[in-house]
Image (cartoon, rainbow, N blue to C red; front, side, top):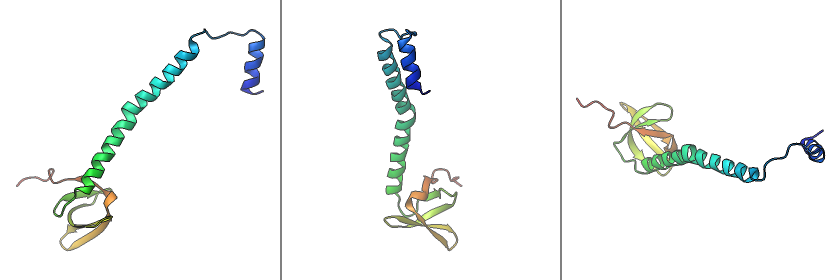
Length: 111
């Protein structure tokens, strides 16, 4: 038997019926649940994505950055989709702009 058959059999047998206002309360609770999910999960994530996109678009030569793979380096050249970072000495890596996740200029100790 499927759920529809069981529901119809209960309705014919005079099973327990929901109060008249229960349908409206159910929809209000569902809507509130989605509003709370949006406020605490989706909205902050969108804000963080916009800040990261702004950071990537404002990169300039000499910025100290960290890639998603944990590579620390200094921006040497910027193209539309990629960034050349100087890692150590003469070692340079070309990485996708989307792999740069953080600026660590402020984190460096001032000696």
